[in-house]
Image (cartoon, rainbow, N blue to C red; front, top):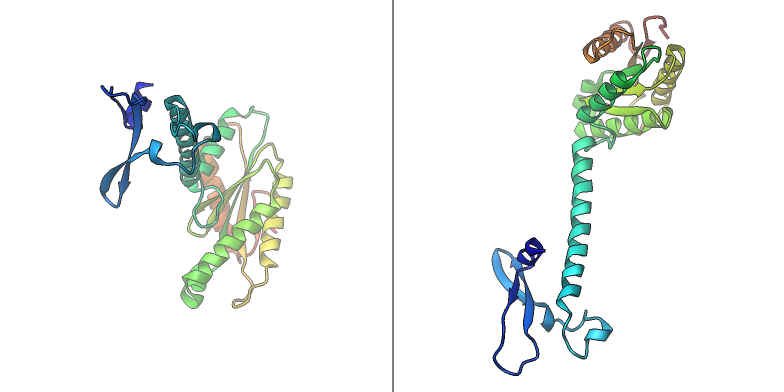
Length: 245
């Protein structure tokens, strides 16, 4: 209560005259660096109907309205901050920090008999796209590829931008052959995209499944090695320990 009174700049005074108003409420408003005080009792247009005659909004009503508006503003601000902290600003999928947290959480909570699969893919010749067609086109490629890949996975899977032109997809409780099928769907869907100014764009994909003794670093290293194999053996393909497409 006291904090709220300070926040709204409440000022209480007693008048010695016959003025029926014994208290008032002022809000300090910063306007281009200059502070001025606004008396809400002088604002007539927004007064409730039952208060227009007296031109006084009860302090409790003003305080409730203020706290309600402030709570909404804080809630919205917190939502925006959470989005900024977990979402890649360009592609609107998870950023590296968030997808790492999801992978770590799923890896730690799984039963030893349950298997997670991890897909890592990279846009082939992306530097050439940027150098030849410009960074705006490069950004468009990233956005469309992220949206296409997201449309190829299931509702309980997670996708994030790992960095630059690399992406990571986590598939909980998924057998490796199913993960390879999803990875191939991602690869073929991206390769089938039509572009106005550039030829087709392809991705190279690595797929691995978790092992009982895995920690997150082993998990990452294995899928990264498989992606590297795909990149150095022709590109535009899916590679796992058991499959080469």
